[in-house]
Amino acid sequence: MRMYLTMFTLALAAAVAMYAADAKAGKAVYDTSCKSCHGPDGTPNPAVAKMMKVEMKDLKTTDADIASVVTKGKGKMQPVKAVTGNAVDDVAAYVHSLKK
Ligand code: HEC
Image 1 (tube, helix red, strand yellow):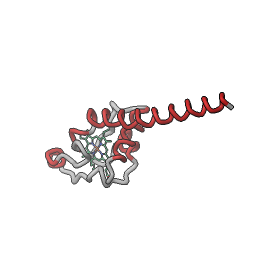
Image 2 (cartoon, rainbow, N blue to C red):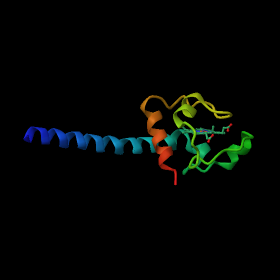
Image 3 (cartoon, rainbow, N blue to C red):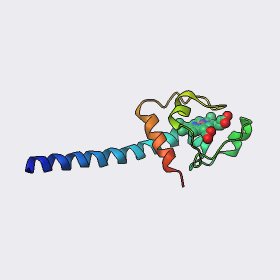
Image 4 (cartoon, rainbow, N blue to C red):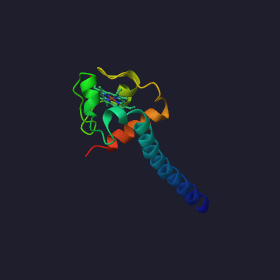
């Protein structure tokens, strides 16, 4: 019983630690690879929209499949090649967390 409780506690601690790491890692990825175009909080940079001649949606309200947009691109947005593997999931989680 004691053994079971210890393992349960460890598993729970690991799950909590993983969740925290995701959000933090996602923000770092966003700040490096997305912020210049999508703004610090998901509000598009108007200069970028004008330069690319496209109307950019607010990332806070988008229902797009973020992971797919990042890896395959969408419309005038090119795939972000620097973001791969876990970083794709992390940044998607971070963008979803911007929703209000
Ligand atoms: C070079 C500028 C640029 C960078 C860097 C960039 N984007 Fe974009 N993104 C755009 C533009 C422009 C669009 C609009 C494309 C269109 O509608 O033709 C867009 C569209 C999107 C959309 C779709 C929104 C919708 O509702 O249709 C998502 C999601 C998105 N970007 C996420 C990201 C994420 C996450 C990153 C970082 C990994 C990123 N973008 C990096 C310029 C950029």
